[in-house]
Amino acid sequence: MIKVHISKNKIIITGHAGFDSYGKDIVCAAASSIVITSVNAGLRIEEDSLGFKEEKDKLTIEVKSNNKNVLLIVENMTQMLEELAETYKKNIKIIKED
Image 1 (cartoon, rainbow, N blue to C red):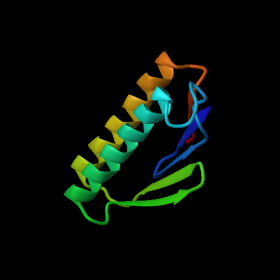
Image 2: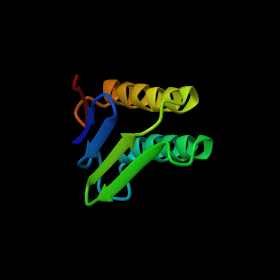
Image 3: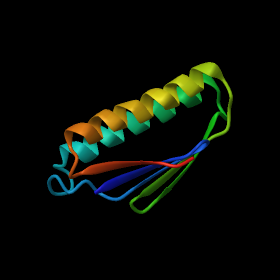
Image 4: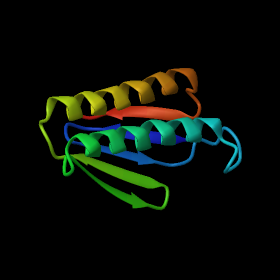
């Protein structure tokens, strides 16, 4: 299962959806596309707006900017992941922390 931990300035994504095998998993592909596109868009708007660290089965995204457009992209990303989680409840879980 993919777990998306969302806090004020940090998003941590871990795991594998388990919908299908590696390379054929549409839930992982969707989550990856959402996240990669969003991070790239944020960085195009403001070069140092987001920090990210990739590890095995883990991605940490740190929001470093208060730029309105960057924040909208991050919000849109989390909403899209939430919509994906609604459709694939067994494969992706959103955990919001205060």
